[in-house]
Length: 375
Image (cartoon, rainbow, N blue to C red):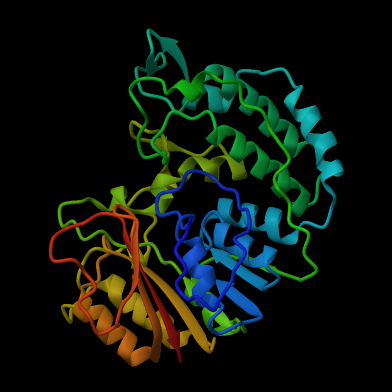
């Protein structure tokens, strides 16, 4: 059971669904919903929507949601859960048809399908693979057919979301596509089966965007903005490719676009997911000329340009910002109404004074921080 932050606030925690995701806020969601109730907004801007679990929860609770993320697959999820107006039965017929298609060898099987060679994950090229060929053959057949079905953008997004959810159930990864397991995971032997996503019946007119948040943030009118930016690692030795989400989830991008991109590396990543092509200020591990972390400066710039009266900021103990630096950013951005620390390892939650040292003296994993700010 999730501890209650505020005894006078009762919140229902709605069901959400999504893929395995590094940095997922699924376990943090009950705390997010409790804190937001303190200021009772009617509209919420989810600036880094990711798998859209937070957006889904807000939509189910009756908020008007504006979701944005740079990733094309996040937009697909957003259109599925926030913009769909069709009933489940419409998609059930389409998905039954797709599930019945015979598999075929194609581009995905060539690059991402492996055979079970004594339990090892590999193909003729000797590289580890994210799926077994019986599932990539289904992927090749289904993904090609979706493009031939003459669907609208929202309807197509529902089918693509169903496909991604199904593939996530039979993959051979630790939750991302920067590398694959050497031995086939037990789930990879299963035959993937598409299901109708758990659609949301909402009377609100939600909005879904896909782009750089700095091109959008000062145009959004929402009562509260929720920001969960990607964090540059505080490990000085970690290369950028190990923390950038374009590298982690390149395959979902390829499945959504079906564009057969140029690939590189042992994980067959998209060339446009390489460190030389894609980057985010929030994931930047370097310091600027004034000796401040670029990632921290990006957070400050974001808070300055936000038009919402309230901002809820998530941050991780593994992030680039130090306690002193974040303290200064928050102080310049407004009044901190609530500060919460969640220690997942010990299952401990506690409110804290925002002036306290919030970064542990010794490195600890899985600590998250939530700061509610009034601008």
